[in-house]
Length: 316
Ligand SMILES: Nc1ncnc2c1ncn2[C@@H]1O[C@H](COP(=O)(O)OP(=O)(O)O)[C@@H](O)[C@H]1O
Ligand SMILES: NC(=O)OP(=O)(O)O
Image (cartoon, rainbow, N blue to C red; front, side, top):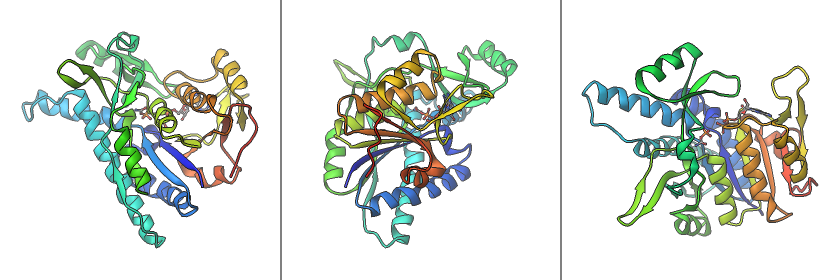
C-alpha cells in the first residue's frame, strides 16, 4: 500500500466543461483502480486555462455592468470548485460502478506565498486561452496584460507564479486522509494568500500546481508523486525531428537536461523541478510523468517517465 499524490494538468483537462467532464471520467477509472488496489490517493489539479476563462468571463460581465468586479483570487477559488465538482462526481460514479464505498471530498485550499517573492515582478504563468501573436499584441495594447509564447502552442496571458510556502488547510487534509476519504486538494496550486497583520489575504497570482503538489506530497509523506499532463512522456529535443523519449531519469540526469534548457519554463520545467524536489529527500520516493489517458499503461511500466533520486526503478 502506497500513499500517492496524483496531479492532473489544467491544460490536459480540455477546453470546455463537456470536454473536461469526459477527460475526468476517463481518468477517474484509473484513479479508482489505484484506490481498489489499496493505495491512499490524494488528487490535485491545475487550473491555468480554467482560471483564465473564469477571469475573462467575470471581467467581461463587470465591464458590461452585469456584475461586480471579481478579483483574481476569487476566480482561483471558483476554478477549484468547478474542477473539484467534476472530479468528485466522476470519482463517486466510478466508485459506485466498482462497488467501492469511499467518501470523496474537495478541500478549498489556500497556499501561503511570500509577498516579497520576485515572481510578483516577473509574471511567467500562462493562463486562459491561446492567441496569435497579433491578437496578443492587441490585447496587451488594450488592457495592459502581459503575454508570452507558450511552448510552441501560441501566445497566452501570463500572471505571477510565486513559490508555495505552506498549505493552510494541511491539518484538515491529513485528518481526511487518515479518515480514509478520497481527497482532492491544492487545486490550481491553491489560492495564493499572504499572511498580514489582519490575517490571510488573497493575492492575484497562480501558483504552479506541480510545485504545490510536490509540497503536499512531501508534507503528507507520500511515496509517489504522479503528474498527469498532455504528453505520455518527457523528451529531450521536444518537438524537434530528433526528439528522444526519456523513460527513467536520475536527479543528476534531470539536472543536466535542465541546464541544457531541454524543458520549457512554465510547462515541463516546473514539473521536472517539482519531481526533483519531491524525490531528493528520500531515495524510496518516485515521481512519474505521463498523460491522463495512459495512467494504467504507465503504472504497468509501458509508458511514462519515472524520476527518482538514483534513477533506479522502484515500482510496487
Ligand atoms: N521536454 C519536454 N517534453 C515533453 N513535453 C514538453 C517538453 N517541454 C515542453 N513540453 C510541453 O509541456 C506540456 C505540459 O505542460 P503544461 O501544458 O503546462 O501542463 P499541464 O498539463 O500541467 O497544464 C506538454 O504538453 C508539452 O507541450
Ligand atoms: N495552476 C497550475 O499550475 O495550472 P496548470 O496545470 O493548468 O498549468
